Image (cartoon, rainbow, N blue to C red; front, top):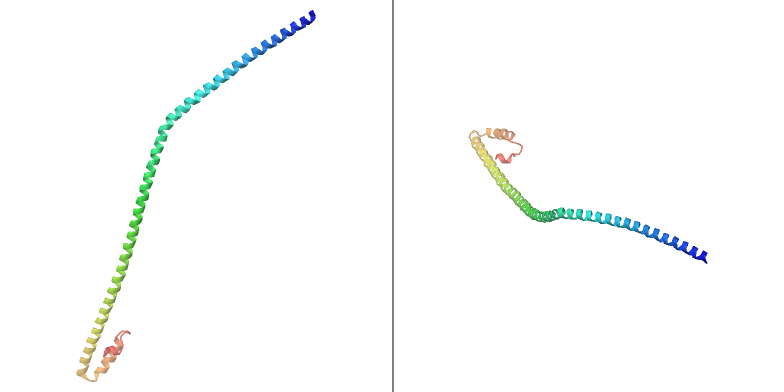
Length: 166
């Protein structure tokens, strides 16, 4: 029995030594875990500081971008309004130009008609006066009247006819 108690004592010592080694290992592992956790906490604190700095710096930028966005909206609205005004002005100028062109064409037709009528009347009067003068000059001499008619017929333009000479 003594042998059993000796073996049991040696087993107990081996178990206690294993338990002590395990506890030492767990303590070392816990120190490493604690160190890693503190490193993680330090990194998180560093990230929080950087995020806070970024947020602090980004806040005015965000406010400025909102102001700029509102200004751009106002400017684009004003531009749209001005473009509508310009479109109205262009339409008005186009209508006025069309009206002026129509008026010019109407006046031109009227003036051309009156000018041509006046020119035709002057031409008719001049032909009548020439005919009258030729009739007067031909009545004094008698027979040369026929010769003068032939000369005048050949001297007139192709638009004059023989009937216009009488």
